Amino acid sequence: MPSPVGYPFGSAFTDHMVMANWREGSGWGAPKLLPHAAIPVSPAMVGLHYGQVIFEGLKAFRRADGRLAVFRPEDHARRFRVSARRMMMPEIPETVFLDALDELVRQDRDFVPAESSASLYLRPLMFASEPDLAVRPAREYQFLLIAFVTDGLFGSEPRPLKVWVNEDHPRAAVGGTGNVKCAGNYAGALRAQSLARENGCDQVVWLDPAELRWVEELGATNLFFVRKTGQSHELVTPPLSGSLLPGVTRDSLTVLARDMGMNVLEDRVSVDEWQDDCRSGRIAEVFASGTAAGVRAVGQVRSAGASWQIGDGSVGPVTAALSEALQGIQYGRRPDSHRWLHLVD
Image (tube, rainbow, N blue to C red):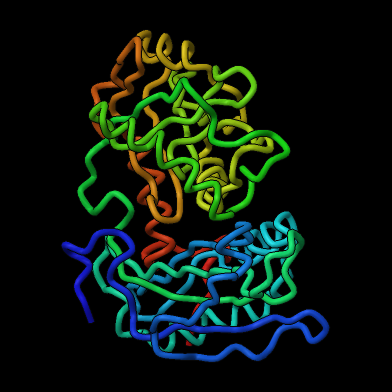
């Protein structure tokens, strides 16, 4: 089993994969467990030309009692079906999706790390495999499930992120594909991410498509603002406007924050408000959340015309508490009162 230490996100793959095929008129064939290997594709494959490609990302954890568990797989299966529907692709039944996860995790169980900061990242993928370049939904599709060991999108070091506000173009438009996980969304985001790095930042902040004023997402993650309200705090996250991805981790954190007695709001936050409220101390913490990222603090913000710090630039107490609560459930250190874990026996 490889150690996750020193492995960039998405490179330490396990030994196996699961494959299933769909064909118009006959539906889904039985999934097959295979060695992780290259697959043959036609140069005329529809997915290569017209972008009928969707994917998901979820994680398997080794709990404190040694058992293996996948976090909220039913919710990821549901989102995978939503993505398929939007991209005119066949919906894979939940039972097939879950059985594929179980089979791969069982087979490659020795890859699931015991470290408290590491996990096994599962990547379900579906693409149009028909070799026909007529401009229409394909009549053949392939589903794949692969996995890799990771200690997180940003590594295991809990360093707060520096982020760059992208004021030039939005990630997605309302009514487009921003609220589903299709491959084209990520290719279109690479230029802005490159500009963020050129400006000394880790990630890009996406603004709304209409006014380029309201904060929406951070890279491929959702954003949260911790606002002071008297002697307590409230948690604020941008509303699901149609151009944001409804994150499973995002939903989990809103539930956990309410469990802690916090008021949770879906509310718009403008860039100017973000800057002013940080300087006044009203916004005390900001963090990103996602399956790959987990919970990661944001310490500094930069744009073409300004820069500011969030709090003292370190990981705040609310961020740390929510991160520990989430990881405590995932690694079996806390009770799974919301029944989010799918045990793999």
